[in-house]
Image (cartoon, rainbow, N blue to C red; front, top):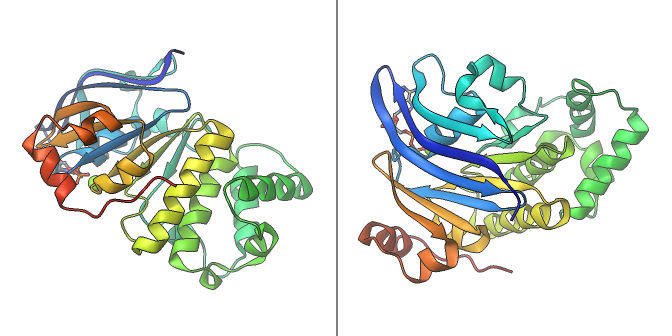
Length: 261
Ligand SMILES: Nc1ncnc2c1ncn2[C@@H]1O[C@H](COP(=O)(O)OP(=O)(O)O)[C@@H](O)[C@H]1O
Ligand SMILES: [Mg+2]
């Protein structure tokens, strides 16, 4: 096994001095998908926001270490962490489509955001984008680049959002409720797309969701959160077939399962 690409050690996080998350330890290896699941308010987003530099003015990591490769993110300011965003740390949120400007083509916007980080010709960009699109199941990459955001459905925008996160080849992608705003049929496409990203690019993904069905369909390991604490952590197959906690069983009963393709 390679060294973990992301490692939390005894992490506490507070907002305005009130502890929101306590004593969290886990690790994610290169190419692995870790699912973080738990009811609303259990601290899932807080946990990954700390690694993305997005805790805001009220939030603070008050104890522990968060290693990304050999960088301790807990030692950096949020502004310093955000310099790694886009390049090292990729992100997918619930409504990726809302990040698009409505009056410019998807391709023009993607090209612009890529050239913020590196110089790349339009032709190189186009080739790379179409290659990424095709490897995650889009056959009509050309058409997507020429489209205006309003010409794409919400599900399609979300899938394009994932492609965007992959374009800069980040070391790890954090996805916070990436399927929660989507119809069940489209959820499956988004799950398949993230799996293709991992399989074809070796992308490491930390996936936050309240839907344990999504975890069952794609995560290798799962961390179950309740009231800011971890209540279970282990291989997904083990946690799902033999949950130790009644709480985990309840999360499982609450949602329809998505099957791994
Ligand atoms: N910016 C904030 N300021 C104060 N409290 C917050 C803030 N963000 C989240 N919290 C609190 O931290 C706890 C965990 O929230 P969150 O991480 O968003 O949970 P989840 O993503 O699991 O729904 C909640 O009690 C929430 O109210
Ligand atoms: Mg959340």
